Structures are given as structure tokens and as C-alpha cells.
Length: 112
Image 1 (cartoon, rainbow, N blue to C red):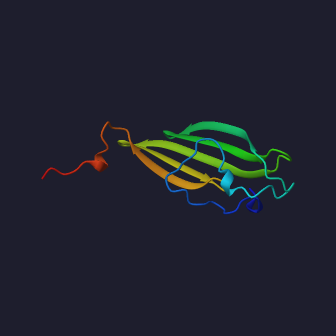
Image 2: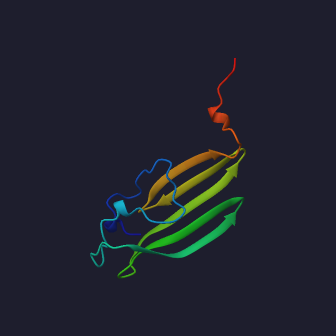
């Protein structure tokens, strides 16, 4: 991973979890070849561990294939919710929770 290629390391992205793609606004340019171009996504893998899906891949410079960052995205189901997390030097860190029920119990109002 290369801190010299990004504007901010692990920026806080709130609840924006990316399963694929790149956060290009945080990319300042390749520290090796000094070019600011699109990136390649390589070594993409999907594995399941303890009921959790984990997607990992590498962000590479399109020109010199320098490894800019390693991206990790996870999804798991806990009770009535899907939980998403993302951790990447380039794309940032984020968490999100979404109800799998038709009506989100967190948004129900009390009728008392």
C-alpha cells in the first residue's frame, strides 16, 4: 500500500461501502510514475468465512502496475440486518447496516 498515492489515508466515508470500483477523488497520482490515470483492479477474490462474505482486490496504477491499495469489503447477516464494511487506503473506511425485513424496526414509531 502506498500513502504517497492518496490525498488522505483511509478517509471516513460514513456509510458508503464500495463492493467494487475506486474512489478517484482521493487519488493524487502514482508515486512511482507520477501519472494520474484510471486504475486497474486485480487479484479480486470472494470468500466466505463464518457466514460472512469477504471481497478483496488490489488497486493498481494503469501505467506502471504499482500497488496503490488493497480493498476489503465484507457483508454479513446479523439477526434482521445486513451489515456492510469497507476498509481501503484509497477508498476509505465505512460501515452500513440495512434491515432485511419489509419494515425497518429501527424506524418504527411507538404507538403508545
